[in-house]
Length: 470
Image 1 (cartoon, rainbow, N blue to C red):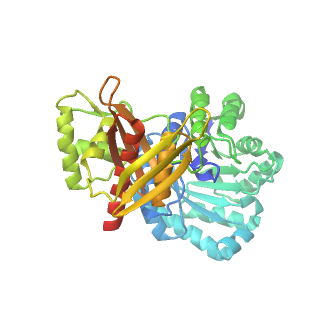
Image 2 (image 1 turned 90 degrees about the horizontal axis):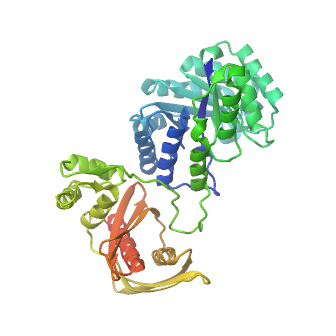
Image 3 (image 1 turned 90 degrees about the vertical axis):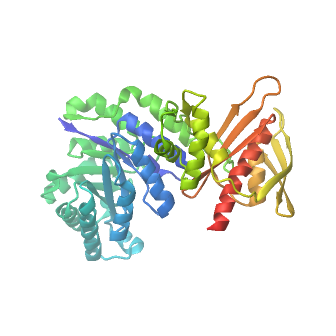
C-alpha cells in the first residue's frame, strides 16, 4: 500500500479576490496541520523581513506537516529561505523552474542548457542545508519531452527527493495525462527511486479526474487546494482516495472526518465579506485561547509569549512589560494573551504623539451607512477626514487612514469591559502591523467608539515615531 501525499497550495494560489492577512496565514497553516495534509506550501520570500517572519511564524506552529518554501535559482535565495525555514520540524526547499521553451526563453531568458545548469546548481545548494528538496517542472506538459526527461534525470542526480510535473495549461484529459506519466517512467530510469508529484490546473474542469488517474499510474504526491481555486480540489481527491484507496492500493492521511469543518473554516477566512478598503481585513476565528502566564513565569517566558503574539520588544520595553505583568500576576492566577496585549499596549514604547484626537462625530443606524468625521492635530495643523464604513468603528478607522494616507494591516482588535454598571468603562486594544513588526495601542472610555479611536491613534503614533527615527 503506497501513501499518497497531499500538498496544499492554497496560500500560493491567492489572488486579488482572496487577500489573506499575516494572521490568517498562520491560522490557515494550523488548520491544515490539523487536517493532516502532508505538505503546506508557502509563497517564496520576496521581502526579506516580512516574508522571513511569515515563514518563521508558520514553521513555529506546524507540528506534523512538511513546510515547503520555493527558492529562486541562485545560492543567495537558498540561504535566505533556509534561514527562515530551518526551525521547522519538517522542512522542504522547492526548486521551481520552467521546462517549456516559451517560458524558459521569455520568463527566464535562458536556453535549455543554461536552465539545466541552473536547476542542478540550485538543487545542490539546497541539499547542502536541507535533506528534503523538491524539483517542480513548471509547464511540463508543453515542454520538449526530450528536455523534460533530461531535466528530471538531472534533478534526481543532483539530489531532489521529489520531482513534480505541472500541467500549467490545464488542457490534458485523464487518459492523456496517464499516457504522459507512463512515458516519464519509461524514459527517466531513476524516477521510481523518488516521489513523483503532479499539479493540474482545472481549466477543463478535469483536474480532480487527472489527479486520481495519475495516482493509478505512479504519482505519489498531489498538489491541491483546500479552498475552491483553479487547481485540484483537496476535499474531492481526499474523499476519492478514501473511498477507492483499497482498490488502487493507496492510502491518504488526510482526516476526512474533520474535512467539512476545517475546510469550512478555511473558506470562511478566504471569502469573509468585507469592504476591500476596510481596516478589518482579518478573518481569523480562533485565537490563542488556552495560553496563559502565571506569577511563576520569568522575564524570558513573558518575552517569548510577547514574541508569539507578534511583538518585537526591545530590552528596555521588555523590562517595562515584565514589571507591569508582575503587578497584574500578583492579583490574578492566570494572565492570558489578551491581557498581555493590553499590558504591551500600555507599557511598551510610549512615544511623543505625532497625532492627537481633536474631535469626532460618528453616525450610524440600521437604515443609513455608518459615517465618521474626525479632526486630528498633527503638530500645529488640524487635519480632517470623512469616511463611510461597514460600522461606526470601521468608518472611524478609515477616516484616520484618509488623514494619514497610510493603510496598516489590523492584526487584532479587542474590546473589554473594565468596570460594571450603566457607565461602565470600556477598554480597547488595537494591534497594527507595519512590515514585520506589530505595534499596539490602548484606549479607555465610557464611549467604546472613542476608546477605539484613541487605541488606533496610540498604535499609529508608535509606527510613525519608529519610521521617523530609523
